[in-house]
Length: 156
Image (cartoon, rainbow, N blue to C red; front, side, top):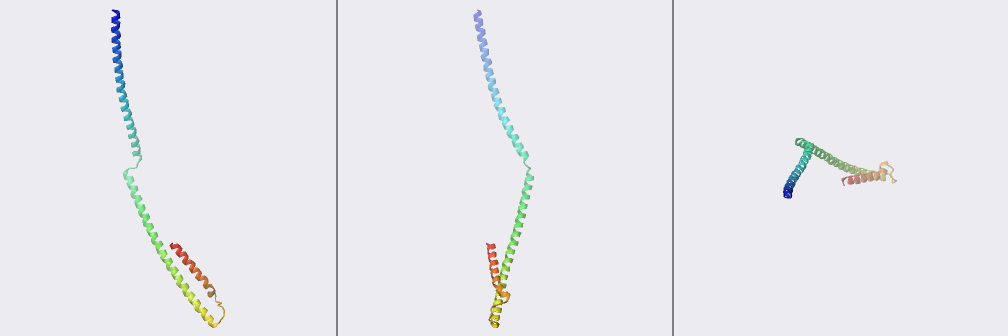
């Protein structure tokens, strides 16, 4: 009898141990699920906090819009200054071109006068020209040609 009661006792103890083990395994599985859910929530919380820091670091919309409007105004001002400068440059080019044309005309007139004087002196004296203007005449024509070349390079 003692063997029967021991066998019954061991069977009961074995079934109790098995039940406790199954309960513990079930509890472990439940806790694993809770842990996984807590990890997911913790990750999401970290993401939210990171986004909150980024958002907090950004200036507010009204400040950004104000800076954008200021930048647009600065661009418009710069464009107006550029247009004014281009207008001045255009006028200066026209003035320079007019000046060069006047110089060319003046050089032609001086060349003609020098030729007339040389012709008159040649009639009065058949010797070589001794007037300084006659000697400088070739230099003036070459200077005019150089200025004209410089102007053409500047326009290019």
